[in-house]
Length: 301
Ligand code: HMG
Ligand code: MG
Image (cartoon, rainbow, N blue to C red; front, side, top):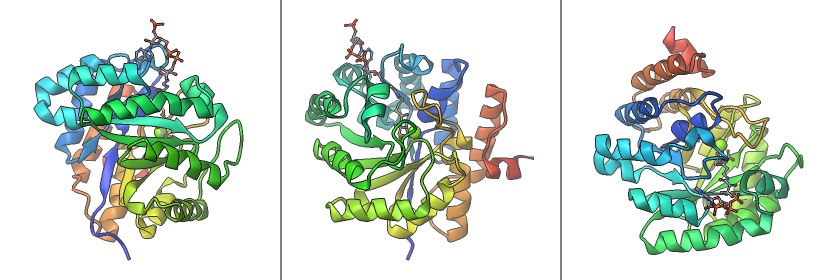
């Protein structure tokens, strides 16, 4: 049976824009976030407090959050922001953010490439970050990347993903988002991973799925996870996205594609599809290239 309602966790402004070749003006980013909120997106991950040299596209994180607080008020502080370490946490706390997301890697190579840490060292970076965040009353989400495959290491054993995910969750996260960073996963793999997490004591209620659509499997994977019992799905408006430290990563599951499927299934989500498509068409215009989302193409003509 299907859940009555799901939460769409919008990552376009963060996962989407972190991977753009050109620097998107901060004003455009603020308008993008405001339009997503106006379209009914219940959760919008706004930006990242990572090292500005590592992700120049999001170097304006503090400025963006300042604009959002001015224009959207308290709601801006509820928007999750990526934080890799204590320095990032300090920057998020300065703004007054209430929700942060740490992001670990299931593989050794990606931990090195994305965090400049070994698989083991990443926990030493996250531990004090999460402890301090929790002491300050913040909510913490934990991502695990490369859950379904890694561009350098190939297959990633399910047990290894579960071990990393459990360790991250047990630091004090309220939700674990399982990332198919390079979009290689398929539905059978989704079931195997969810079953393994459930067996390890992490139920579908604390899991989110984060699909990239490189191989066109994102929607099939989301449908599979939905049937399994997962009720939080990450998606990016218009299918923007990728990861600058994983070449083979493309855009996320497009929010519009997810919304179309959920509407067809009668599962509630609260997002206005027409407004969302309008936002993605506007953003595509700003970026100078069309959205890869099939639903945006179908409705936007
Ligand atoms: P590092 O070079 O090892 O940092 O980078 P460090 O701890 O050695 O510090 C070096 C200097 O950087 C220090 O300054 C720090 O203060 C400064 P100095 O004392 O030399 O003047 N510094 C910072 N400055 C600003 N903000 C910070 C910060 N941290 C240190 N937060 C680090 C380690 C983790 C910082 C770096 O590797 C990094 O920023 N990585 C982020 C990469 C990233 O953002 N990747 C994309 C997001 S992950 C993703 O997209 C996947 C996801 O979507 C899920 C999926 O699809 O699977 C989430
Ligand atoms: Mg991602």
